Picture 1 (tube, rainbow, N blue to C red):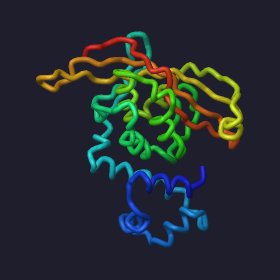
Picture 2: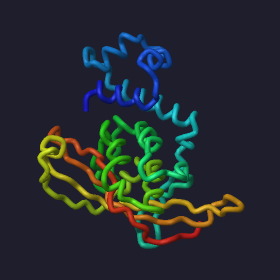
Picture 3: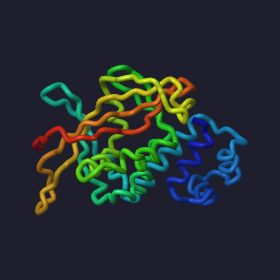
Length: 237
């Protein structure tokens, strides 16, 4: 993924104009314009710094909630990403802009799967696919809210991914971005259930999902979406 695309996507997530974005970073406006247009290529560390900046803005605005996430292992040896906050509580079936904006903080990052040391990249298309795909629009009730809040644990979900299943690409529109096919991994995550009176966590609903990754013609693997979300069980605090 080109640095110019990463920078444009990250700036878009802040809601700032180029001028305001440049001023907030102390970078000349002409430099931002040249980076976004591809006339100049920034040092490799710049997209990572801008990604951090976006994350901090999300935190300041109360959308990140300090990512209260941890990984546990259940009695069956399964790793579970435990998400301890529900920052998306009333997501409408159609309007997931808050979720999409939240996910922009991961764009340009790379995370590693523990079991295989595979590197999984996140590009600018991931937030839109996660928030607006046909599979997401078909989700209902608890599964829909579970996917919305699972956005908080993307790095950890990649980390615990297991049991990869490969399939060749059969769609012409993905001849380049999934030239070498698709991988589906099993992931699990827990979403808290709160007591209505005390607002304390009383249990976690445990969900299983399939993490979909595309193998691009550039040789890298990119996170594409999370599918087939279903509740497995409930666990006490």
